Image 1 (tube, rainbow, N blue to C red):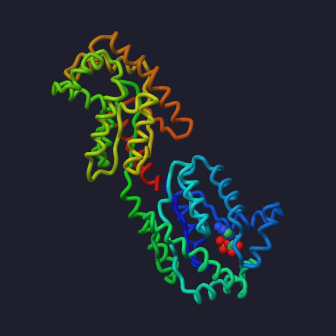
Image 2: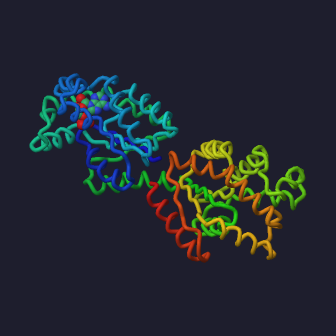
Image 3: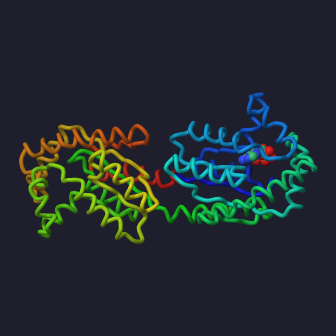
Amino acid sequence: MLNIALFGPPGAGKGTQAEFLINRYKLIYISTGELLRQEIAAKSYLGLQAEKIIVSGGLVSDEIIVQLIEKSITDNPKANGFLFDGFPRTWVQAYILEGLMIKLNTSLTCLINLKLPVEESIARLMKRGETSGRSDDNESVIRTRLSEYYEKTLPIQQFFQGRGVYHEIDAGQNVEAVNRSVSEIIQTIVSKRLFNIVLFGYPGSGRGTQAEHLAEKFGLEYVATGKMLQQEIKNETELGEQIGDLYESGQLVPDEIVVKLIEKKLENHNNIRGFIFKGFPRTFVQAYILDGLLKKHHSRVSQIIELKVPTIELINRLNARSKTENCMPYDRSTARIVKRLQEHEEKTVPVVDKYKHNRRVIRIDGRGSFEEVAARTVAEVEQGMRNLF
Ligand code: AMP
């Protein structure tokens, strides 16, 4: 997720920058000021409580703010990320934000302080007051709002500095220049993030070939547990000996063993755009393990793709492969092929279904030539990389 908080005195241009950011990164916009104005317009209990304070230029209680924010967040469980405007405004709210992010299993990506001198804030707000229709855009209220900002809000920049997510820019520049500075900050953060794909599909669906192609094209590290296990057997390692029989018969290898291999692979990466996993996760347990392993690298599963090929075609493909030199030990007989397909259906298909409950799983038609399928997978990954942030 990409979670951004825009920070800065009233009049710094948070609303203007927010508009650009929510469109560019498809974020859910949460402006506490806007939410409060809606409550006031609706004459709700919350609105009535907040109105007097807003008109005077003071800060509404943290208790009210937490209710507003929580609702906006829980209403959007599938969000790409959130953009906070005018929140957090107090030290307590900084903790509230942190707690909400933890609840969503994410964190604040950055807090950007749009710095502006006091006199410039006043001049801008007075000008805005000519057309905004906001009762708090008049000089005496503006001064109260600013003193609230400098007294209660500005100090919380320390909170975020301490967490390594604080950035600041000069908001006195023109809108386009501020926009460029904001984009640069976000792009720098995003480019350091890993883009991780999980590629699902039945044995014979072409996962391996497609995954290798995607890995090469997008600079991803290819993580294929089957291949890694095969290597262990070939090298006659201790692990290889333990798993030889299981592997040959097409059964799943115990999680403890697979996890160690994956862990090693994730630790030893460098200079890559992300990972592409094939053949993992294969079970519910492994799906949890993957989340945990990626979290350790401040990352997560970015895209889930499922290659769909009709069963008859799968059998034909695996059968054909068994007659070539690419024959895998587990493709050697029809009985083994069927066993593998069954194993996949029983253990891995439910994992894909589980992902479908809370994540978008992209279905790709796996029929046709390698090039045809590759064109489809590449298009989806390009789109995913563009959309994600
Ligand atoms: P804004 O639209 O962000 O300038 O907010 C307008 C007014 O709403 C502020 O002056 C406060 O009275 C109130 N308000 C908005 N957000 C908060 C918040 N996070 N905490 C306390 N009061 C807020």
